[in-house]
Image (cartoon, rainbow, N blue to C red; front, side, top):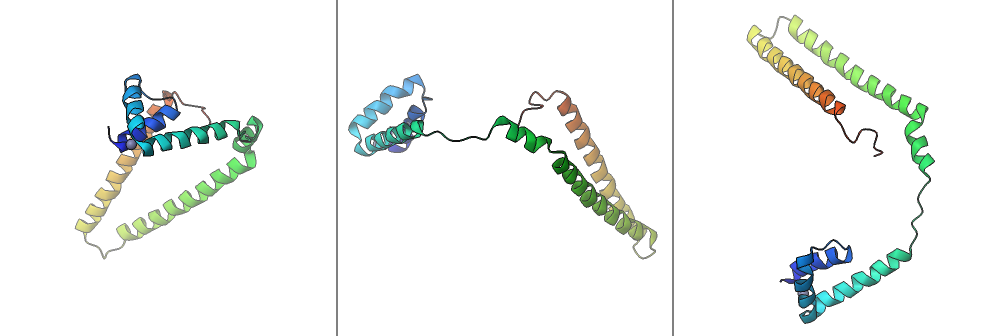
Length: 144
Ligand SMILES: [Zn+2]
């Protein structure tokens, strides 16, 4: 076993996630390797200190208020609506001008039209897939 392998196993050992068959080889390596043994001792000390630490956590209501704050959610939706709406209007205007002007050739108009059509089809398929997935989403409602 190399020191790199041993280090991975030592970390797993500290977290109590080491596979049974890896315990003995790791212990053997530590018996003959000063550096890995020291790492192990350091990690054990760190773990011991961390166990005594109580990390304060905000109450559950705090998260719920954060997510359910109507003003916050509404602002988010209004922002999105304005941003995406303006973007779509701008694009529509540009495409309208492009297709109604006489300057670009019919061939170029067909190519650009094909790109737009392909994009809209892909967008539609993506939304349809997402909608289908959300019906069977087992993580629905799980707090992020
Ligand atoms: Zn080692």
